[in-house]
Length: 65
Image 1 (tube, helix red, strand yellow):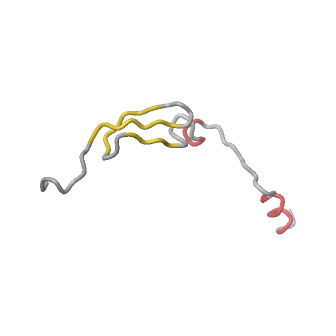
Image 2: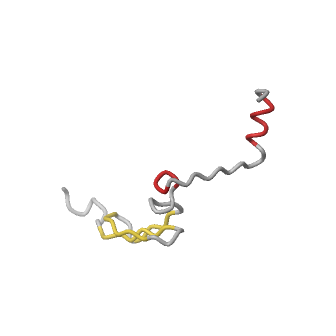
């Protein structure tokens, strides 16, 4: 690698909204995320359905279900 053209690679602390934190390598010192493997429905097995504005009902009415 050429010197002084790449950003510094440092240990980074990633903090999730659920409170979990991870240590990884990145070019940033700190990252904050909204969702991680501890709280994501795919990894936890807990599916959450958010029906904003009655989308499911509109779909059912549209296709006569």
